[in-house]
Every structure is written in C-alpha cells, then in structure tokens.
Amino acid sequence: MSNDPVPPTPARRGLLIILSSPSGAGKTTLARRLMAWDPGLRFSVSATTRPPRAGEVEGREYFFRDRAAFMAMVAAGQMLEHAEVFGELYGSPALPVEEATLAGRDVLFDVDWQGGQQIRNSMLGKHTLSIFILPPSIPELERRLRARGQDSDAVIAARMRKSRDEISHWPEYDYVLVNDDLDRTEKKLKTIVSAERMRISQQPGLVEVVRHLNREFEARQ
Image (tube, rainbow, N blue to C red; front, side, top):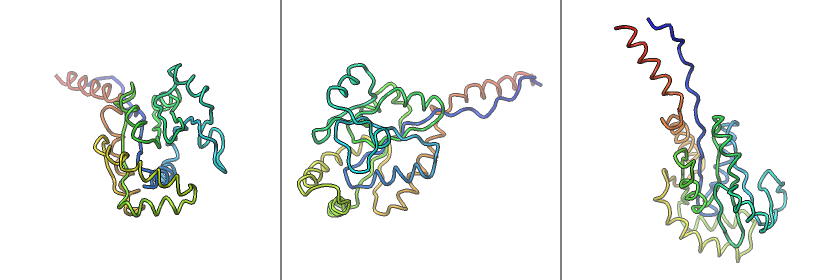
C-alpha cells in the first residue's frame, strides 16, 4: 500500500458569474437573492461616471468617478471590462476579481451584454458562467420599468428601444432563463450555479487527487 497521505478535498477556483438582461427583466433582484443564498458570494462593484442616485453609497453600489479618472483606469489596464451605456461609462476593476477567484470565491457581475462579452474574452474567460435573463413579454418589461419609479418617461422609452438590441444577444450566453416567475427563476439560477461550481476547470486540485489514485494503483502491483 502507498504511504502517501490522502489528499484533501480539492480547493475550488471561483467563478465569474455574469448576469445580463434588458433593464427591467429582473437581473438585479435575482442577483440580490443569489447573494442572500450564498453570503460568501462576492459582488463585483463597478466603477461608473454616472452620478449617484438617492441612497447609493460610494464603494457599495458603485465607485463613482469622473470621465477622466475612469479613462485613466482603462488606459492603465485596471478594468476587466468597460462599456458606455446611455452616455455613461461602466467598468469592473480587474485585480479584486482575480484575487477573489484565486481564493475560491465566486464573483457576481450585474452587467450588460457588452460587459459580459468582454469578460468572456478576457484572460479569466474560461472561468466565467454567463446567464441571460429574458422578460416574459415586452408589455411586462415596460410595466416593471414603470413600477420601479426611478426613471422619467423619456428614459423608459430609451430603455425600451435598447431592449430589442440587448435581447438579440441571448445566444452568446451559457444559459438563458425566462423570468416569468421570480421564485421559480431564482431556483433555476441556484441549480445552475451549484452545478457549474463542479466544472473541471474550477477544481484545479483534482490533478493531485488523480495522481494520488494512480500511485495507489502502482502500489498494488
């Protein structure tokens, strides 16, 4: 018999979980529920040039930067992704994400299709899990936007026009969920995340486990 110690359960590499949808489809609510389900899940706090809304706190919802400071971060290679949406810049600082995933923590991104595409094409792309949330209907999408009470009629109209283009990118994602019932969609989302955490690419320690098994085979000969 081999005297090698049995290796511990292999450590897991964290996922970059991308949630995208047109405004009003429910991705922000689903992201909050996912965070409540797993307190170890880290939310990627984006930088943005848009002004803070009532109740938003620097470093919690966003890092608020002016355009010059934001572009300086991009030029320095400090953004994992960035995009311009409705005239404002949004981006995800890269270093905190890489540090979290190396420590085995998943990082959640609430981004549009442009941000999701850049993350998937980045050096961390093989560790991404991308999920697109669809509304059950266009009238329901508009109803949800109005029910939020955050935007003017002009902004809502702009979001509705943009939603068609956003929805056209659904085939680029690993999974697509139709959010016709929030509780049911939440359950599906948790199932996807639980399964994807067991991907071979997320379990680098498996190599040592298999080596140990092979040594045990050799010891039996």
